[in-house]
Image (cartoon, rainbow, N blue to C red; front, side, top):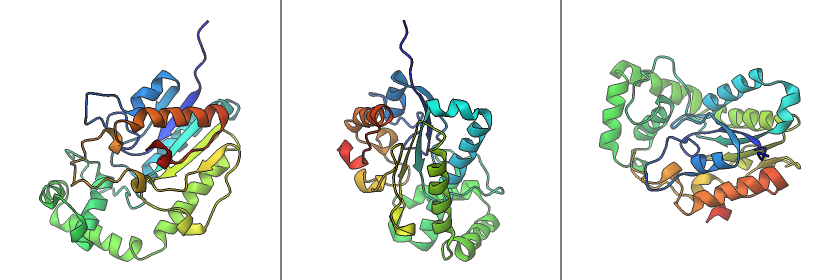
Amino acid sequence: MLEHKPNLWIFGDSYCDPDFQNDKSYQGWPQLIKKEYNVTNLSKTGSGPDYSMQQLVKMLKRTKINDRKNIHIFFVISDIFRIPLDFANPSILTHSKESLIVNYMLFKFFPDTVKNSIELQKDINKTWTTKQQKKIEQIFRHHILYSSYTKTEIIKTVLFLKELSFQFASVYVASVYQHIPDFFGTIDNTKNFYLAKTKIVDVFDNDFGYGEDPRNNHIPKDSHKKLVEHISKWTKELQPFEFKDLI
């Protein structure tokens, strides 16, 4: 008799994208986890929370409420500034437009933080005209960087995911860049809902130049199997974990 595999939905960016495999000598965790679960992975390299939420809503519309109790959700909140702009040219060689927008803003406002800026500038110029670049800069300067946008988007995302935990087998949430407690204090975890306390980048420092990270999913080789093991313990025993446990 075949063993029944649990159902797992995965949402996120390159930390979860099964196609983000820079080192072909080993499998990343999004590939390894397929051996234990029926996986629906809708992660996309360079995407932001807005994209992930769109994919989640699509899955909710397709899934009956009675069937949701047999599904686990693993949701990684990427950079909240990765927003879709309709006028952006989607044909980019290395990154999705949402990720490139963030790198562009770092380049404009905090140039000292950007490594390999020459390649970044090339991608920017391939993607947007000078007029479009100025428009993006205006949007960020006046409506996002100096507003409550980040705080409200984080709060809405986390609270929506927590509400879903009443319908699903479990919901695990982790943030890549933003330290969520900074936005609205601590949030009470429940038996089947867990919000990781530590930012992923604080554990797996992505201190590489633009487009230069050689690791699969930005995670060290030895940590991929550990992540699968911890996800398994969470879904089967509701034993929470932090990404620092993977080191």
